[in-house]
Image 1 (spheres, helix red, strand yellow):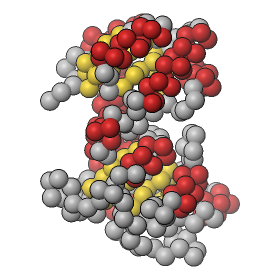
Image 2 (cartoon, rainbow, N blue to C red):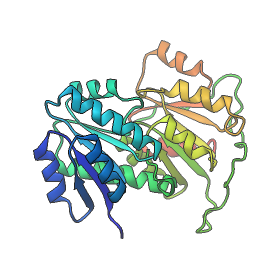
Image 3 (tube, helix red, strand yellow):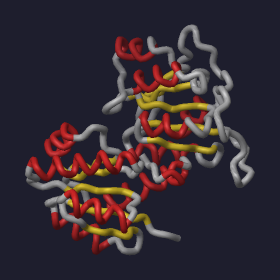
Image 4 (cartoon, one colour):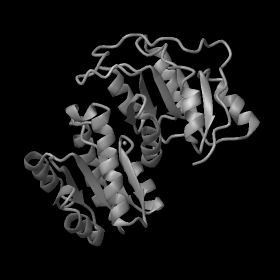
Length: 288
């Protein structure tokens, strides 16, 4: 099977070298400098699946160069990953036009980074987004509460290319939207035996997926950077092709007033994180 191709840059040379040298069994890596001409040249002949920026005491000029290059990557639907301290990540996000697709907060083991990258790109492949070079992917649920004025179990409006997949799989389809790759992996593992499952790490990726495919249910993280759950839900409701898809919020909030605020956006229901397998299956079966 072909390896994922990762283009690496950044001043955290030890991490770059480790990922480059220790993971040849799973990843094909190429390093580049932070100069825009060098990154553009590597992009042309390497055609990466993912661009990773490993930060350590980065100069602002370097961050601006990578942010400019990230805008070019975005036009080609190549996902962008960041590795650094919380402050470095925050600063870098301030220079970028769009949120990164994948984030690792230092310290993080190289094995965890490798697994996170592979899970993220696997999620993209499962979602069908890899064909377009686009990737961008715990113990109890309190309850699922039908929102007032919303009819549960409404069939989704048809979208192009919906239906049985190429393998003849006619199981119901669920789209999970969450910025936490580990949460995406967990829920996918819980559901994949009984349902077709696609995952998206943000609303932008989800909307792109829904342009060519449809789903029977959306599990949507309430609190995400960039467009949060309520914003994504509003966008779904404003699109005639997605307006009728049942949506269940995934949320870690427990305060009564905040739960009421979540329900004011009129999802079909909400589930508290962390996630229990049996209760998740019970909740999902109310809609698909």
